[in-house]
Image (cartoon, rainbow, N blue to C red; front, top):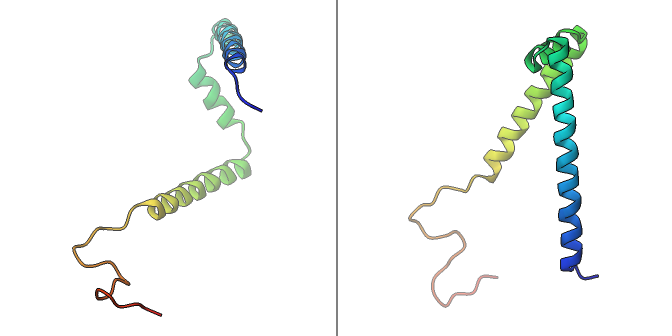
Amino acid sequence: MAFSDKDLHAQEQQIQILKEELSRLNTQFDAQLKGLGISEDDLLTALDADLPPELQKMMSEAQDKAKREGAARSAQSAPAPVTGAKAPGTGRRGVVRL
């Protein structure tokens, strides 16, 4: 099935509708926070404070694990240092390796 301009236009319209809905909900949420006299930072702090100690410990362990795994993956994806030597496996000209 080919993706047509009509499909692209329909998706763009859906994205626009979702953006407008998100904007409306964000405005409503901000108004509710203002009405309660709470800032977003206060809300996040309160949520963290309400967590049981076991859950806080699990969250910090999960974050540490994610950081270690991310660092390991980024180290794996780093290119090898370039040296001036010949590439391994390149032999003399005209020689075939078996």
